[in-house]
Length: 301
Image (cartoon, rainbow, N blue to C red; front, side, top):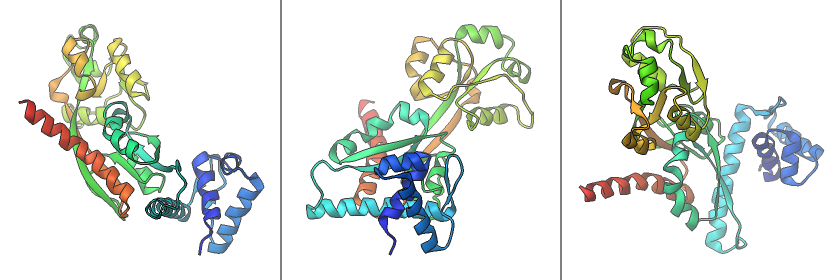
């Protein structure tokens, strides 16, 4: 039987990014945290966390953190059903979300779920092509990302498909793309990417200029709101989801640089394949949000 105090020490060190920070979270000394993890490693006969900066869990450590989170969810639900949990106690759910989703529809979809349950979301943000790595590594209980295939011991559910558009201001277009959106003009015009993991613009270039290796000036803007603001100010051009810039397109503040360059991005909800009420309700909230949106649009036609 694994001592949950040892598991909590391991999780705290990894999640907080240090032994001292993990100790503060648990309200114990740093030496006590180190001892608990050492005892767990001796019990299992293997290293569970690499003593780097920040500390990184080994594969075994990731599995133990995942086990702890599953155990905490199930204990929370059992306690609620038996009336054993004190009033006001919350459970934390680590979730992986891409920035565009967080900036737009995510909280709308989660609103009712969060109000009906004592949940504290712990949101980790990354590119939609990378969030599944968080789930694979045991950092989160579920994530929104691309790719229909489910990871081992996980499930996958389709949410929706969004078109990402190549956008700029009319003045920017006139300055840089007056002679067309060609490989030559692309290599001169400044473009914006969310971060170095952003693959959306690369997919557009592969579609429009297959086989060509393009080198172009890039600025990185790791914020969905600031990213659109950079485009709106005419500082660069870039890819953004259509639903996020609907008002700018309608007002003419932003224009679509090249309609042939649209990139469809399908989003899926990935989560552990564990039957708990909280995970099932969370899944229903996210999947149901788009069902309601679709029904509302059909009713308005």
